[in-house]
Length: 432
Ligand code: PMP
Image 1 (cartoon, rainbow, N blue to C red):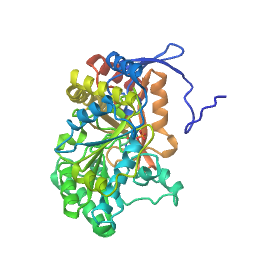
Image 2 (cartoon, rainbow, N blue to C red):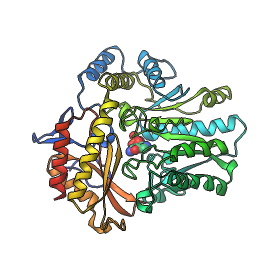
Image 3 (cartoon, rainbow, N blue to C red):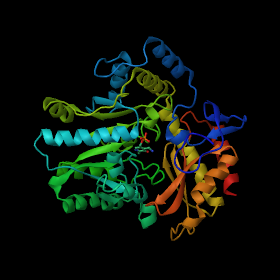
Image 4 (cartoon, helix red, strand yellow):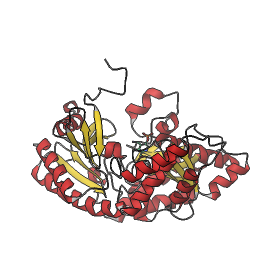
């Protein structure tokens, strides 16, 4: 028996090597990594330039504690990241993962409110379903009851509004009225909670693991931004999954020109080479916190030089290979092919996505949107079938953790046409 334990049943196969979009197990079997791990390995596996940059950093230093030293790697990565942020988001705080980045955003927002005399604000509204992390603060904002309920009262679950799943509600996502309809739920919730108790609203620009590549309806994010402004609520954009080119722009929010108050990132900026995350805010938020005595927060491994050197090399590869552009072009092609699969396979009830964050959802009935019976466990079974055929995909329950199954198809952004053919063949065979 293995000494390791993770959630659920373990995977029996043992990873040996990975290159580009492919992975091999110890038996020499090849898999196409159709989910970039968990939407992590954006630039593909074993990129030589990143490995060389890490090697150079390792030979210089692998660790320096952030309260003792900055390093060239952390300074340069912070500057490069800030250069990719919308208007004036220039203050970067490094962490080692997505949950840590969300924790950091919540704590910065809270300390800022205290520093400016708005200490009554403490609630972070989010959406259901959503996933923002597994640590208690990030989990409190996660809209997925089976994950949150067991941990009350260790944490206080935060208020939720419905995610804008127009396809289930029979609304047209291209109609600006639809975007307004869902965004106005935020205003109503802020009013119901008491506006002076609400600190922030956390949102993924394109929904990831919880909703399965949910693209917001027309005008939704812009109106959410306006509502946050009206009520003095901070808009926290969770770009953990959407960031670093995944949706065909560096940030998912870039598609809508929305500038949040705080951006949180992880996954794609380390691209699997190192545990890395970041929270990016601006002087307006960070200044008062530092003036009031400093930011009471930090993780030991945060900003370590090896992770930062990896992150810097990853960002250089994203630019050098124009991976945002490739994700946009290949994403459109992949999405069109997934629509083709939907025509051939009745079980697919919806196809959606942006760039290379794409998904399809299983339904018992396309017209009513009825999900498959929960007991079928279709989402898990499909992953296993595809896995046996050499294709790795990522699937979850969609509907508030109860019913509904979606499959995310999110390969590395270095994807080409022939990889798409291979993915579609693998999916087609698995669906059959
Ligand atoms: N936010 C989002 C949108 C995520 O998808 C995830 C991870 N799936 C997290 C936060 C948490 O990141 P991590 O697992 O690195 O802590």
